[in-house]
Amino acid sequence: METDIFVNRECVYGGTFDPFHNGHEAVCLHVLKHTALQEIPLRVIPCATPALKRPAQASDDERLAMLKLWRKSQENASRIVIDAIELEMGQVSYTADTLSKLAQRDASLTTRVWVLGVDAFNSIAQWHKSDELIRCLNFWVISRLGEESISNSLNLKEATDLDALWQKGPGYFWYDDRLAYREASSEIRKSINQKPWPVPQPIADYIERHELYQASA
Image 1 (tube, rainbow, N blue to C red):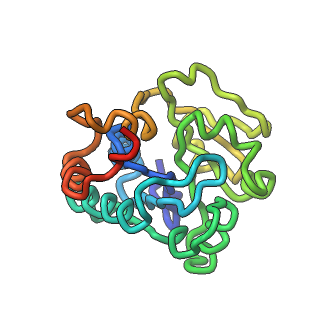
Image 2: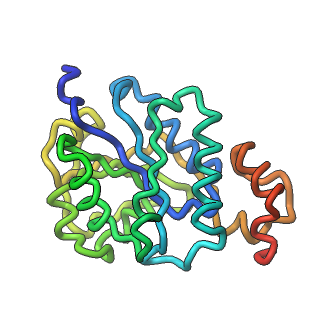
């Protein structure tokens, strides 16, 4: 593959991350280790107020701190960007608004691939300005245990593999079934008194030190 197709491109992975767990980490590492993407950065964006879920229990500062601690522990830290753009906007987090802000910040990035779980992709028709999103983005859809099928409700075109996804214009998705994770932040919050928690160690240490999620137990 010609490496120049990766110039001025990045992967973006957003979520509430309340807390960031082993499944989230697995997705990030899966993206980072892909041999064709050695020079592509991964932008991780914690949302402010989720549009389709309940608000986060941990504060913005706490969730951001946990992500930064996790990044610091990674050998590929130089390729990971923890971006507080949605927290700084301080409103309901819509991907369309985030894309607009990102474009204002750096117009040189010509292509962004949005990384998301199949459960999130299956709800994409409910996203704010979803018709605009598919004209701007391609989607790297990660399989997840418990979500056995993919629903292409907006009739996006399917790429045959990740390399093809990067070479296509916007409006494509690729379903990656090589990774499947079970963890859910809501279940971790409910079982916070049951250790070990399925979260990266720096985050486990932070949760314990700051006694987060005790009200959920």
